[in-house]
Image (cartoon, rainbow, N blue to C red; front, side, top):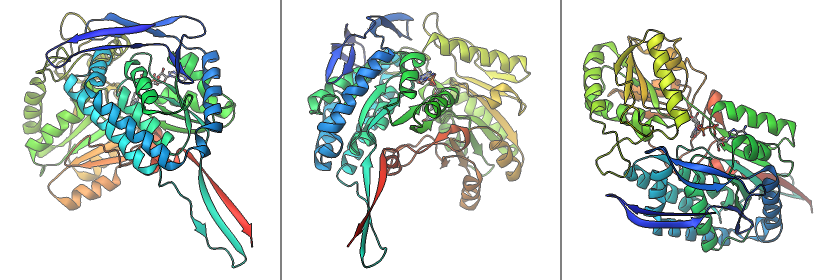
Length: 493
Ligand code: NAD
Protein backbone atom coordinates (compact mmCIF):
# COMPACT_ATOMS: atom_id res chain seq x y z
CA UNK A 1 0.00 0.00 0.00
CA UNK A 2 1.12 3.52 -0.69
CA UNK A 3 -0.02 7.00 0.20
CA UNK A 4 0.37 10.02 -2.00
CA UNK A 5 -1.01 13.44 -1.27
CA UNK A 6 -0.49 16.85 -2.80
CA UNK A 7 -0.80 19.63 -0.24
CA UNK A 8 -1.87 22.84 -1.90
CA UNK A 9 -2.91 24.94 1.07
CA UNK A 10 -2.37 28.48 2.28
CA UNK A 11 0.00 27.15 4.97
CA UNK A 12 1.93 24.48 3.08
CA UNK A 13 2.50 23.40 -0.47
CA UNK A 14 4.25 20.11 -1.08
CA UNK A 15 3.85 16.44 -1.85
CA UNK A 16 3.99 13.47 0.48
CA UNK A 17 4.34 9.93 -0.91
CA UNK A 18 5.29 6.89 1.07
CA UNK A 19 4.63 3.23 1.69
CA UNK A 20 1.97 2.59 4.33
CA UNK A 21 2.85 -0.99 5.17
CA UNK A 22 4.12 -2.27 8.50
CA UNK A 23 7.77 -1.44 9.16
CA UNK A 24 9.49 -4.60 10.33
CA UNK A 25 13.21 -5.40 10.29
CA UNK A 26 13.99 -2.29 8.27
CA UNK A 27 11.48 -3.02 5.49
CA UNK A 28 7.92 -2.02 4.67
CA UNK A 29 5.75 -5.16 4.44
CA UNK A 30 2.07 -6.03 4.13
CA UNK A 31 0.23 -7.26 7.19
CA UNK A 32 -0.03 -11.05 7.45
CA UNK A 33 -3.80 -10.85 6.91
CA UNK A 34 -3.47 -8.48 3.95
CA UNK A 35 -6.29 -6.35 5.35
CA UNK A 36 -6.34 -2.59 5.75
CA UNK A 37 -7.60 0.24 7.93
CA UNK A 38 -9.10 3.45 6.50
CA UNK A 39 -7.54 6.67 7.73
CA UNK A 40 -10.09 9.48 7.77
CA UNK A 41 -9.62 13.23 7.38
CA UNK A 42 -11.53 14.73 10.34
CA UNK A 43 -11.99 18.03 8.48
CA UNK A 44 -14.15 16.38 5.82
CA UNK A 45 -15.00 12.94 7.21
CA UNK A 46 -13.54 11.43 3.99
CA UNK A 47 -11.01 8.62 3.69
CA UNK A 48 -7.41 9.83 3.10
CA UNK A 49 -5.68 6.50 2.62
CA UNK A 50 -5.49 2.88 3.74
CA UNK A 51 -2.82 1.51 6.03
CA UNK A 52 -1.89 -2.09 6.78
CA UNK A 53 -3.88 -3.75 9.55
CA UNK A 54 -1.34 -5.62 11.67
CA UNK A 55 -2.11 -8.82 13.59
CA UNK A 56 -0.67 -10.65 16.58
CA UNK A 57 1.39 -12.68 14.07
CA UNK A 58 2.95 -9.45 12.80
CA UNK A 59 3.72 -8.49 16.39
CA UNK A 60 5.57 -11.82 16.76
CA UNK A 61 7.61 -11.12 13.61
CA UNK A 62 8.40 -7.59 14.80
CA UNK A 63 9.46 -8.85 18.25
CA UNK A 64 11.78 -11.43 16.63
CA UNK A 65 13.37 -8.70 14.49
CA UNK A 66 13.75 -6.44 17.52
CA UNK A 67 15.31 -9.25 19.56
CA UNK A 68 17.76 -10.05 16.76
CA UNK A 69 18.79 -6.40 16.52
CA UNK A 70 19.15 -6.16 20.29
CA UNK A 71 21.45 -9.20 20.33
CA UNK A 72 23.61 -8.18 17.37
CA UNK A 73 23.68 -4.55 16.25
CA UNK A 74 22.09 -2.65 19.12
CA UNK A 75 21.79 -3.17 22.89
CA UNK A 76 25.21 -3.68 24.43
CA UNK A 77 26.76 -3.83 20.93
CA UNK A 78 26.01 -0.19 20.09
CA UNK A 79 28.20 2.21 22.06
CA UNK A 80 26.61 5.36 23.47
CA UNK A 81 28.50 7.53 21.01
CA UNK A 82 26.91 5.68 18.09
CA UNK A 83 23.41 5.89 19.60
CA UNK A 84 23.96 9.59 20.18
CA UNK A 85 25.12 10.17 16.61
CA UNK A 86 22.16 8.34 15.09
CA UNK A 87 19.63 10.18 17.26
CA UNK A 88 21.27 13.50 16.36
CA UNK A 89 21.04 12.58 12.69
CA UNK A 90 17.37 11.64 13.12
CA UNK A 91 16.61 15.01 14.71
CA UNK A 92 18.28 16.74 11.74
CA UNK A 93 16.22 14.74 9.24
CA UNK A 94 13.05 15.59 11.16
CA UNK A 95 14.03 19.24 10.98
CA UNK A 96 14.63 18.94 7.22
CA UNK A 97 11.15 17.42 6.72
CA UNK A 98 9.40 19.33 9.52
CA UNK A 99 6.81 21.03 7.30
CA UNK A 100 5.79 17.76 5.69
CA UNK A 101 5.50 16.08 9.11
CA UNK A 102 3.39 18.98 10.40
CA UNK A 103 1.16 18.86 7.30
CA UNK A 104 0.59 15.11 7.74
CA UNK A 105 -0.42 15.73 11.34
CA UNK A 106 -2.83 18.54 10.38
CA UNK A 107 -4.27 16.14 7.80
CA UNK A 108 -4.99 13.04 9.87
CA UNK A 109 -5.36 14.62 13.33
CA UNK A 110 -7.02 17.92 12.36
CA UNK A 111 -4.78 20.13 14.50
CA UNK A 112 -3.90 23.46 12.93
CA UNK A 113 -0.80 23.48 10.77
CA UNK A 114 0.67 26.24 12.97
CA UNK A 115 0.25 24.17 16.13
CA UNK A 116 1.48 21.07 14.31
CA UNK A 117 4.67 23.02 13.57
CA UNK A 118 4.97 23.69 17.31
CA UNK A 119 4.41 20.02 18.15
CA UNK A 120 6.96 18.89 15.58
CA UNK A 121 9.49 21.38 17.01
CA UNK A 122 8.94 19.85 20.45
CA UNK A 123 9.33 16.36 18.95
CA UNK A 124 12.63 17.34 17.30
CA UNK A 125 13.81 18.89 20.58
CA UNK A 126 13.01 15.63 22.41
CA UNK A 127 15.10 13.53 20.00
CA UNK A 128 17.95 16.04 20.23
CA UNK A 129 17.75 16.08 24.04
CA UNK A 130 18.02 12.28 24.35
CA UNK A 131 20.80 12.21 21.75
CA UNK A 132 22.70 14.14 24.39
CA UNK A 133 22.01 11.50 27.04
CA UNK A 134 22.96 8.45 24.96
CA UNK A 135 26.68 8.59 25.80
CA UNK A 136 26.11 9.63 29.41
CA UNK A 137 24.34 6.55 30.77
CA UNK A 138 26.45 5.28 33.64
CA UNK A 139 26.34 3.46 36.95
CA UNK A 140 28.24 4.12 40.16
CA UNK A 141 31.07 2.58 42.12
CA UNK A 142 29.72 1.65 45.57
CA UNK A 143 31.87 1.73 48.70
CA UNK A 144 31.61 -1.63 50.48
CA UNK A 145 34.90 -2.83 52.00
CA UNK A 146 38.56 -2.65 50.99
CA UNK A 147 38.65 -6.19 49.63
CA UNK A 148 35.71 -5.69 47.32
CA UNK A 149 34.91 -3.69 44.23
CA UNK A 150 31.18 -3.13 43.77
CA UNK A 151 29.62 -1.16 40.97
CA UNK A 152 26.34 -0.72 39.14
CA UNK A 153 25.56 -0.85 35.43
CA UNK A 154 22.46 0.63 33.78
CA UNK A 155 21.73 -1.91 31.09
CA UNK A 156 19.05 -1.67 28.39
CA UNK A 157 15.96 -3.78 29.10
CA UNK A 158 15.69 -5.44 25.68
CA UNK A 159 12.64 -5.37 23.40
CA UNK A 160 10.20 -2.72 24.56
CA UNK A 161 6.62 -2.22 23.39
CA UNK A 162 5.25 1.29 22.99
CA UNK A 163 1.60 2.20 22.39
CA UNK A 164 0.62 5.80 21.68
CA UNK A 165 -2.63 7.79 21.22
CA UNK A 166 -3.87 10.16 18.52
CA UNK A 167 -3.78 13.55 20.22
CA UNK A 168 -0.06 14.34 19.76
CA UNK A 169 1.01 11.59 17.35
CA UNK A 170 4.57 12.68 16.51
CA UNK A 171 5.34 14.17 19.92
CA UNK A 172 4.26 10.97 21.70
CA UNK A 173 6.25 8.92 19.16
CA UNK A 174 9.35 10.97 20.05
CA UNK A 175 8.73 10.91 23.81
CA UNK A 176 8.68 7.13 23.52
CA UNK A 177 11.41 6.21 21.05
CA UNK A 178 14.07 8.77 22.05
CA UNK A 179 14.78 7.66 25.66
CA UNK A 180 14.38 3.99 24.70
CA UNK A 181 16.94 4.26 21.88
CA UNK A 182 19.30 6.45 23.90
CA UNK A 183 19.53 3.67 26.50
CA UNK A 184 20.00 0.91 23.90
CA UNK A 185 16.63 -0.82 23.70
CA UNK A 186 14.91 -2.03 20.55
CA UNK A 187 11.29 -1.13 19.88
CA UNK A 188 7.96 -2.42 18.67
CA UNK A 189 5.70 0.60 18.35
CA UNK A 190 1.96 0.84 17.73
CA UNK A 191 0.64 4.27 16.75
CA UNK A 192 -3.05 5.10 17.02
CA UNK A 193 -5.14 3.68 14.17
CA UNK A 194 -6.67 7.19 13.80
CA UNK A 195 -3.39 9.07 13.24
CA UNK A 196 -0.70 6.73 11.91
CA UNK A 197 0.78 8.92 9.15
CA UNK A 198 3.67 10.62 10.95
CA UNK A 199 4.73 7.39 12.69
CA UNK A 200 4.90 5.64 9.31
CA UNK A 201 6.72 8.59 7.71
CA UNK A 202 9.25 8.50 10.58
CA UNK A 203 10.22 4.94 9.60
CA UNK A 204 11.92 6.16 6.43
CA UNK A 205 13.75 8.86 8.42
CA UNK A 206 14.88 6.22 10.93
CA UNK A 207 16.13 4.14 8.02
CA UNK A 208 17.87 7.13 6.40
CA UNK A 209 19.51 8.11 9.72
CA UNK A 210 21.21 4.70 9.67
CA UNK A 211 19.59 2.81 12.56
CA UNK A 212 20.20 -0.90 11.94
CA UNK A 213 17.18 -2.96 10.75
CA UNK A 214 14.94 -4.18 13.59
CA UNK A 215 15.92 -1.45 16.06
CA UNK A 216 12.60 0.33 15.50
CA UNK A 217 9.58 -1.60 14.20
CA UNK A 218 6.17 -0.01 13.66
CA UNK A 219 3.10 -2.24 13.59
CA UNK A 220 -0.06 -0.32 12.73
CA UNK A 221 -3.35 -1.83 13.80
CA UNK A 222 -6.11 -1.82 16.37
CA UNK A 223 -5.70 -1.71 20.13
CA UNK A 224 -7.67 -4.86 20.88
CA UNK A 225 -5.53 -6.91 18.44
CA UNK A 226 -2.01 -5.47 17.97
CA UNK A 227 -2.01 -3.50 21.25
CA UNK A 228 -3.35 -6.45 23.20
CA UNK A 229 -0.80 -8.82 21.62
CA UNK A 230 2.00 -6.47 22.65
CA UNK A 231 0.76 -6.07 26.23
CA UNK A 232 0.58 -9.85 26.70
CA UNK A 233 3.70 -10.77 24.68
CA UNK A 234 6.12 -13.03 26.58
CA UNK A 235 9.20 -11.54 24.89
CA UNK A 236 8.38 -7.87 25.30
CA UNK A 237 9.99 -7.02 28.63
CA UNK A 238 8.60 -3.55 29.07
CA UNK A 239 5.56 -1.68 27.83
CA UNK A 240 5.14 2.08 27.75
CA UNK A 241 1.65 3.35 27.09
CA UNK A 242 -0.06 6.70 26.66
CA UNK A 243 -3.82 6.80 26.38
CA UNK A 244 -6.97 6.43 28.44
CA UNK A 245 -7.04 5.20 32.02
CA UNK A 246 -9.35 2.35 31.01
CA UNK A 247 -6.88 1.00 28.44
CA UNK A 248 -3.99 1.55 30.87
CA UNK A 249 -5.75 -0.70 33.36
CA UNK A 250 -6.18 -3.40 30.68
CA UNK A 251 -2.53 -3.20 29.71
CA UNK A 252 -1.45 -3.63 33.32
CA UNK A 253 -3.71 -6.66 33.64
CA UNK A 254 -2.25 -8.23 30.49
CA UNK A 255 1.28 -7.51 31.73
CA UNK A 256 0.47 -9.12 35.09
CA UNK A 257 -1.05 -12.20 33.45
CA UNK A 258 1.81 -12.74 30.96
CA UNK A 259 5.47 -12.14 31.87
CA UNK A 260 5.12 -9.39 34.52
CA UNK A 261 6.65 -6.96 32.06
CA UNK A 262 7.50 -3.54 33.44
CA UNK A 263 4.77 -1.00 32.79
CA UNK A 264 4.80 2.79 32.56
CA UNK A 265 1.54 4.62 31.92
CA UNK A 266 0.64 8.17 30.93
CA UNK A 267 -3.11 8.43 31.31
CA UNK A 268 -5.95 10.88 31.53
CA UNK A 269 -6.63 13.96 33.64
CA UNK A 270 -9.21 16.46 34.85
CA UNK A 271 -6.82 19.20 35.80
CA UNK A 272 -7.79 22.15 38.01
CA UNK A 273 -6.80 25.70 37.14
CA UNK A 274 -7.19 27.99 40.18
CA UNK A 275 -7.46 31.77 39.81
CA UNK A 276 -7.27 33.85 43.02
CA UNK A 277 -8.67 37.38 43.51
CA UNK A 278 -5.18 38.87 43.33
CA UNK A 279 -4.31 37.27 39.96
CA UNK A 280 -3.44 39.34 36.92
CA UNK A 281 -6.79 38.76 35.21
CA UNK A 282 -5.61 39.41 31.65
CA UNK A 283 -2.84 36.86 32.01
CA UNK A 284 -5.07 34.36 33.79
CA UNK A 285 -7.74 34.61 31.07
CA UNK A 286 -5.19 34.11 28.27
CA UNK A 287 -3.52 31.12 29.94
CA UNK A 288 -6.84 29.57 30.97
CA UNK A 289 -8.06 29.69 27.36
CA UNK A 290 -4.83 28.11 26.18
CA UNK A 291 -5.02 25.58 29.02
CA UNK A 292 -8.53 24.50 28.07
CA UNK A 293 -8.68 24.85 24.29
CA UNK A 294 -5.16 23.94 23.16
CA UNK A 295 -5.32 21.06 20.67
CA UNK A 296 -9.14 21.37 20.69
CA UNK A 297 -9.22 20.23 24.31
CA UNK A 298 -7.67 16.90 23.32
CA UNK A 299 -4.86 17.31 25.83
CA UNK A 300 -4.35 15.00 28.78
CA UNK A 301 -3.28 17.91 31.00
CA UNK A 302 -6.03 20.31 29.80
CA UNK A 303 -7.21 22.76 32.48
CA UNK A 304 -10.84 21.70 32.29
CA UNK A 305 -11.96 22.76 35.78
CA UNK A 306 -11.37 26.49 36.14
CA UNK A 307 -11.87 27.61 39.77
CA UNK A 308 -12.23 31.40 40.15
CA UNK A 309 -12.38 33.22 43.49
CA UNK A 310 -15.63 35.08 44.12
CA UNK A 311 -14.10 38.62 44.11
CA UNK A 312 -13.14 38.42 40.41
CA UNK A 313 -15.50 35.68 39.25
CA UNK A 314 -17.83 37.94 37.21
CA UNK A 315 -15.01 39.89 35.59
CA UNK A 316 -13.03 36.73 34.80
CA UNK A 317 -16.04 34.96 33.31
CA UNK A 318 -16.89 37.96 31.13
CA UNK A 319 -13.35 38.26 29.76
CA UNK A 320 -12.87 34.49 29.44
CA UNK A 321 -16.11 34.32 27.44
CA UNK A 322 -14.95 37.13 25.13
CA UNK A 323 -11.63 35.35 24.62
CA UNK A 324 -13.34 32.02 23.89
CA UNK A 325 -15.63 33.68 21.35
CA UNK A 326 -12.56 34.86 19.43
CA UNK A 327 -11.46 31.28 18.76
CA UNK A 328 -11.75 30.74 15.04
CA UNK A 329 -12.95 27.21 14.30
CA UNK A 330 -12.25 25.92 10.80
CA UNK A 331 -9.86 24.42 8.24
CA UNK A 332 -6.59 23.45 10.01
CA UNK A 333 -4.59 24.69 7.01
CA UNK A 334 -6.12 28.20 6.99
CA UNK A 335 -3.67 30.57 8.71
CA UNK A 336 -6.44 32.35 10.67
CA UNK A 337 -7.80 29.10 12.21
CA UNK A 338 -7.14 28.48 15.88
CA UNK A 339 -9.25 25.34 16.33
CA UNK A 340 -9.69 22.48 13.86
CA UNK A 341 -11.97 19.45 14.07
CA UNK A 342 -11.99 16.81 16.79
CA UNK A 343 -10.08 13.75 15.70
CA UNK A 344 -12.88 11.31 14.86
CA UNK A 345 -16.60 10.63 14.72
CA UNK A 346 -16.26 8.54 17.90
CA UNK A 347 -14.69 11.44 19.81
CA UNK A 348 -17.21 13.90 18.34
CA UNK A 349 -20.09 11.75 19.57
CA UNK A 350 -18.46 11.25 22.97
CA UNK A 351 -17.96 14.99 23.52
CA UNK A 352 -21.51 15.82 22.38
CA UNK A 353 -22.87 13.24 24.82
CA UNK A 354 -20.98 14.98 27.66
CA UNK A 355 -22.46 18.33 26.61
CA UNK A 356 -25.92 16.70 26.69
CA UNK A 357 -25.26 15.25 30.12
CA UNK A 358 -24.14 18.67 31.44
CA UNK A 359 -27.45 20.15 30.35
CA UNK A 360 -29.47 17.22 31.68
CA UNK A 361 -27.73 17.28 35.06
CA UNK A 362 -28.63 20.96 35.47
CA UNK A 363 -25.41 22.87 34.71
CA UNK A 364 -25.81 26.18 32.90
CA UNK A 365 -24.58 26.10 29.29
CA UNK A 366 -22.83 29.46 29.23
CA UNK A 367 -21.22 29.31 25.75
CA UNK A 368 -21.21 27.05 22.69
CA UNK A 369 -22.49 23.50 23.01
CA UNK A 370 -23.14 22.81 19.32
CA UNK A 371 -21.40 21.47 16.27
CA UNK A 372 -19.62 24.02 14.10
CA UNK A 373 -19.85 23.82 10.30
CA UNK A 374 -21.76 21.33 8.21
CA UNK A 375 -19.20 18.58 7.65
CA UNK A 376 -16.28 17.13 9.64
CA UNK A 377 -16.06 16.83 13.39
CA UNK A 378 -16.08 20.46 14.53
CA UNK A 379 -17.40 21.50 17.96
CA UNK A 380 -17.82 25.03 19.30
CA UNK A 381 -15.71 26.09 22.29
CA UNK A 382 -18.04 25.30 25.18
CA UNK A 383 -18.25 26.61 28.75
CA UNK A 384 -20.52 25.42 31.54
CA UNK A 385 -21.14 27.29 34.82
CA UNK A 386 -23.28 26.63 37.92
CA UNK A 387 -22.09 23.05 38.17
CA UNK A 388 -22.21 20.64 41.11
CA UNK A 389 -19.14 18.58 42.15
CA UNK A 390 -20.79 15.24 41.38
CA UNK A 391 -21.75 16.09 37.77
CA UNK A 392 -20.15 13.99 35.04
CA UNK A 393 -18.79 17.11 33.29
CA UNK A 394 -16.94 17.99 36.53
CA UNK A 395 -15.62 14.49 37.27
CA UNK A 396 -14.91 12.79 33.93
CA UNK A 397 -12.38 13.51 31.24
CA UNK A 398 -14.23 14.88 28.18
CA UNK A 399 -11.20 15.33 25.90
CA UNK A 400 -12.80 18.10 23.87
CA UNK A 401 -13.23 21.91 23.92
CA UNK A 402 -15.49 21.81 26.95
CA UNK A 403 -14.74 23.29 30.38
CA UNK A 404 -16.46 24.27 33.60
CA UNK A 405 -15.95 27.55 35.47
CA UNK A 406 -16.54 27.17 39.22
CA UNK A 407 -16.78 29.95 41.86
CA UNK A 408 -14.89 29.42 45.14
CA UNK A 409 -14.49 31.39 48.38
CA UNK A 410 -11.27 30.42 50.17
CA UNK A 411 -7.98 28.58 49.77
CA UNK A 412 -8.79 25.56 51.87
CA UNK A 413 -12.06 24.98 50.04
CA UNK A 414 -10.51 25.24 46.57
CA UNK A 415 -7.64 22.88 47.39
CA UNK A 416 -10.16 20.30 48.61
CA UNK A 417 -12.31 20.66 45.46
CA UNK A 418 -9.29 20.68 43.14
CA UNK A 419 -8.04 17.41 44.64
CA UNK A 420 -11.51 15.82 44.51
CA UNK A 421 -10.79 13.72 41.41
CA UNK A 422 -9.36 10.30 40.63
CA UNK A 423 -6.81 11.99 38.38
CA UNK A 424 -3.59 13.84 39.26
CA UNK A 425 -1.84 14.83 36.06
CA UNK A 426 -1.53 18.62 36.24
CA UNK A 427 -2.78 21.76 37.98
CA UNK A 428 -2.29 25.53 37.86
CA UNK A 429 -2.46 28.46 40.27
CA UNK A 430 -2.81 32.14 39.38
CA UNK A 431 -1.93 34.65 42.12
CA UNK A 432 0.46 37.59 42.53
CA UNK A 433 1.18 36.42 46.09
CA UNK A 434 4.14 34.09 45.67
CA UNK A 435 3.70 32.52 49.10
CA UNK A 436 0.11 31.60 48.42
CA UNK A 437 0.83 30.43 44.87
CA UNK A 438 3.60 28.08 45.97
CA UNK A 439 1.77 26.84 49.07
CA UNK A 440 -1.22 25.88 46.94
CA UNK A 441 0.97 24.42 44.17
CA UNK A 442 2.57 22.13 46.77
CA UNK A 443 -0.81 21.03 48.17
CA UNK A 444 -2.25 19.99 44.80
CA UNK A 445 -1.97 16.29 44.02
CA UNK A 446 -0.57 16.52 40.51
CA UNK A 447 2.57 15.54 38.61
CA UNK A 448 2.90 19.05 37.17
CA UNK A 449 1.92 22.34 38.85
CA UNK A 450 2.06 25.54 36.81
CA UNK A 451 2.19 28.93 38.52
CA UNK A 452 0.87 31.89 36.50
CA UNK A 453 1.10 29.88 33.28
CA UNK A 454 -0.32 26.73 31.70
CA UNK A 455 0.79 23.86 29.42
CA UNK A 456 4.51 24.57 29.56
CA UNK A 457 6.15 21.27 28.68
CA UNK A 458 9.85 20.79 28.02
CA UNK A 459 11.90 17.82 26.85
CA UNK A 460 14.16 18.10 29.92
CA UNK A 461 11.39 18.36 32.55
CA UNK A 462 9.63 15.24 33.88
CA UNK A 463 5.96 14.79 32.99
CA UNK A 464 3.52 12.24 34.42
CA UNK A 465 0.73 11.60 36.84
CA UNK A 466 -0.21 11.14 40.47
CA UNK A 467 -3.14 8.84 41.30
CA UNK A 468 -4.93 7.31 38.29
CA UNK A 469 -3.14 9.59 35.82
CA UNK A 470 -0.28 7.17 35.51
CA UNK A 471 2.86 5.42 36.62
CA UNK A 472 6.37 6.69 35.88
CA UNK A 473 7.64 9.87 34.26
CA UNK A 474 8.42 10.78 30.68
CA UNK A 475 10.89 13.47 29.55
CA UNK A 476 13.97 14.60 31.41
CA UNK A 477 16.48 12.34 33.10
CA UNK A 478 13.63 10.46 34.81
CA UNK A 479 12.53 8.78 31.58
CA UNK A 480 15.89 7.00 31.31
CA UNK A 481 14.93 4.97 34.39
CA UNK A 482 11.96 3.56 32.44
CA UNK A 483 14.31 1.90 30.00
CA UNK A 484 17.19 0.49 32.03
CA UNK A 485 17.76 -2.41 34.35
CA UNK A 486 20.23 -1.71 37.14
CA UNK A 487 22.75 -4.48 37.71
CA UNK A 488 25.03 -4.60 40.78
CA UNK A 489 28.40 -6.30 40.21
CA UNK A 490 30.34 -7.53 43.28
CA UNK A 491 34.02 -8.32 42.75
CA UNK A 492 36.02 -10.12 45.42
CA UNK A 493 39.54 -8.67 45.18
P1 NAD B 1 -6.99 4.79 24.04
O1 NAD B 1 -6.61 4.31 25.36
O2 NAD B 1 -8.27 4.32 23.46
O3 NAD B 1 -5.90 4.46 22.93
C1 NAD B 1 -4.54 4.71 23.08
C2 NAD B 1 -3.76 3.68 22.32
O4 NAD B 1 -4.00 2.41 22.93
C3 NAD B 1 -4.16 3.53 20.86
O5 NAD B 1 -2.99 3.26 20.10
C4 NAD B 1 -5.07 2.31 20.88
O6 NAD B 1 -5.13 1.64 19.66
C5 NAD B 1 -4.44 1.47 21.96
N1 NAD B 1 -5.34 0.51 22.60
C6 NAD B 1 -6.70 0.58 22.71
N2 NAD B 1 -7.16 -0.52 23.36
C7 NAD B 1 -6.09 -1.28 23.68
C8 NAD B 1 -5.92 -2.53 24.36
N3 NAD B 1 -6.96 -3.21 24.85
N4 NAD B 1 -4.67 -3.01 24.53
C9 NAD B 1 -3.60 -2.33 24.06
N5 NAD B 1 -3.71 -1.17 23.39
C10 NAD B 1 -4.93 -0.63 23.20
O7 NAD B 1 -6.91 6.35 24.15
P2 NAD B 1 -7.14 7.41 23.01
O8 NAD B 1 -8.60 7.55 22.82
O9 NAD B 1 -6.32 7.05 21.82
O10 NAD B 1 -6.46 8.72 23.67
C11 NAD B 1 -7.14 9.56 24.50
C12 NAD B 1 -6.77 9.30 25.95
O11 NAD B 1 -5.37 9.31 26.16
C13 NAD B 1 -7.29 10.35 26.89
O12 NAD B 1 -7.96 9.76 27.96
C14 NAD B 1 -6.05 11.11 27.36
O13 NAD B 1 -6.14 11.70 28.61
C15 NAD B 1 -5.01 10.10 27.29
N6 NAD B 1 -3.69 10.72 27.06
C16 NAD B 1 -2.83 10.85 28.11
C17 NAD B 1 -1.60 11.46 27.93
C18 NAD B 1 -0.61 11.60 29.05
O14 NAD B 1 0.54 11.94 28.79
N7 NAD B 1 -0.96 11.35 30.27
C19 NAD B 1 -1.23 11.92 26.67
C20 NAD B 1 -2.12 11.78 25.63
C21 NAD B 1 -3.35 11.17 25.85
